[in-house]
Image 1 (tube, rainbow, N blue to C red):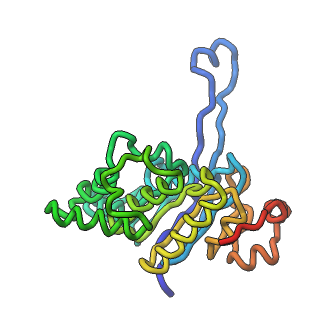
Image 2: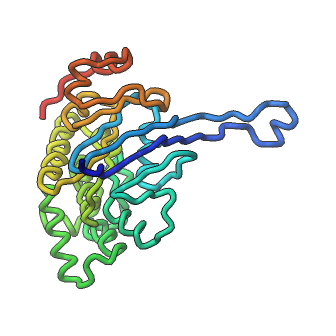
Image 3: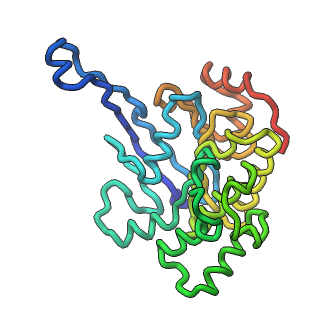
Length: 271
């Protein structure tokens, strides 16, 4: 049996919502805690897409941030390519794992540095991981990345404000590809885009998966988008995984009333 690319076990994250200590001392108010993610477990096979779907506040983006290491879980752990991100003390191994995972954020308007040209944006991960040392090789890699996402080599000299939202998200995807990742976390990558542009970005992500064998964790509130992208789906409600199944089976025969409600509210997306 093939080892999964990603294993998340009992991921849990709590946030302290308590008033300051002195206020609680004077008023007698107890501490308050929000359990944003409650013991969520799932696996992602290599080369496949696992979608986490749910309404706003269900814990999707919190899980995404724990998976890429931007947030530390209070319990549970994340294993990528056999390395546990939360317990490993081997700095070299962790650096190698971080190189092979990247994230595409929700907003293409805030995730790109407006003061940097596209060339600098794409070179940042290449230089950070010391992947290509010579300038000629770096420039060649930038051209390759732009071509992979359907942009022109001349776009390297432009700034983010010179592009549409869909083009900016293509730049974000190219930046994610720059470190040659095997695993990408896509956190609502099309929700800030027009419907017609959404289809183009989804098609690009699917094409890149076929060409490069990428593994995706795909975060979305939109079941129509998830239906296009996912091989496996986990449904989140109030931080808990209430249903998980192969995508085709889940859409054909959902077991939870909450899942049925999400599916019934789904418009059709043409891709």
